[in-house]
Amino acid sequence: MKAIKIFAAVIVLILTTSATTNKISANDKKLVGIWKGFEIEKQIKGIEKHWIVQRFSNGTYTIMFTTKENCEIETFTEKGKWWTKGDTFYEQQEDSETFESYKYSIKEGLVVHFKSITSEYEFDDYKLD
Image (cartoon, rainbow, N blue to C red; front, top):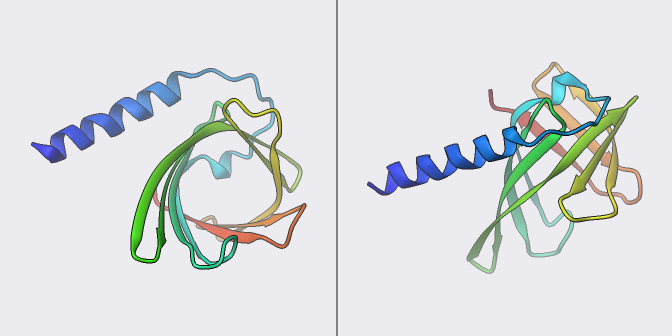
């Protein structure tokens, strides 16, 4: 029964997000789909972070994060808009005036490497679908 409730919640989340329309004009279609990633202490010492991101062709995204610190696990979700221009990827969270920007490169269509333009932070997303 619990699995059915979780499955239903994920379906509702996907349908709600995909129903959102967006006027972003330039998206690299190779980034659309479901991706996973992880990092260990790249942004915050002592924090291990895992995520699954779904980027939709309409320029919206949903990320489900799981973080672990001192054996405590937390989960949270982020939604927003994404777009590309040349080799630059932009991501803007819902209700935010600012956006993050990364240089990106795609390796064999299965891995995307992101490098922050404003910091030393970098990470990879791995294709799931």
